[in-house]
Image (cartoon, rainbow, N blue to C red):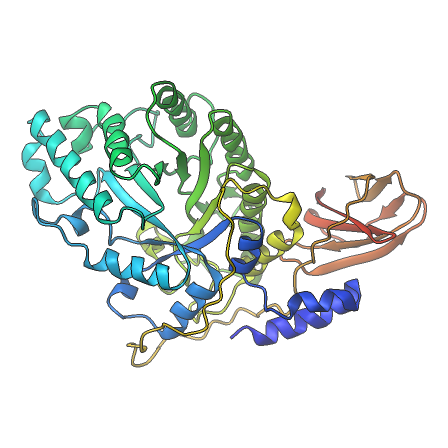
Length: 480
């Protein structure tokens, strides 16, 4: 479905960077293949409709081609796995684990202890601490035990911190009946059952700063305490559900804040994973091509942080196509990287551009195991159970250009932008190419005296590629 895009990309790559670059496209690079080369996981959920066979076959084809980590939207939560006390239902989870194994994917388990989607029978024990502890312990031991060695990473505790002034979420049945120590116990129990599984605390709004009054600041202090007390936490999951306001051309949430949080966690030996990313627009507004390009830039900024911080290993999007998305419940729309017709949006191109910009040798993987390229040849997609797709045609024009190619040789010089002038320190002459955040070429010139005037470019963020004698430097810059 993406051949026309890739064919044009090959032509463009040859034009810009010489015939030697064309061979890189022979294998049809994907988000998955580029991530695996860099020792990272890029993934998306399997929507609840998938479990009932209610999605077109192309959905699954895209999913297993582009992604190498998967999580269920709802099917491994408490109410799904233990709908009645002591009676467990693993059917849907088993289906996803089997799919992941057949397609060489990492599996995230979501989530063991959460205040939401708890079956009503659990509330019968909210005034009996001893019994409630036994309920939680039994649930964790049974669920983690069932998928021991098959689920690589668990959200052990989800959203235990309130969204206002940071404090524990007081209306959680687990907090009310047990107190905040339920978190410590949950991690200990999960680790005892599967010592090899990664164990995460997962929450939203963690991209909004790490000050003491921000949620991430509160979580950071708890992680410090957990690590000091020997609680077996190995990762924090940032849900990263953010919104583009479209009115002021900015979006709520900061990749730079997430970077700062990652670096603080790195000091504690704890990973930071992006676990539920989407960047939506308010429902009811007309989303323009310019809006989608900006959305792509925002996606890319998060991917840049992800690839540049060595303790970040998983980049997971909360959906594949805008047609099947939970965002309507948040009064948002069009927050994913494929449109209603399963065609890639500028956000997809932006993620590809970021991966290609970061050469393999520059990305540090936090995982010890080596990545094995996907060699799946057999299409395991079930028959399409959708009789007829009645989706209105998406009128967004598809971009047919491709992202910049990575280079293994880096220039020893430095570059920076002052106003509209690019300054190259340490070199007299070089070729300069500028790209937007989707990887599309927007400017090219020859630098002869250490400076290049960037004429005719709008203010915003760009990628600069400088080449001299076969060596290359790539850097993001902001034009004001």
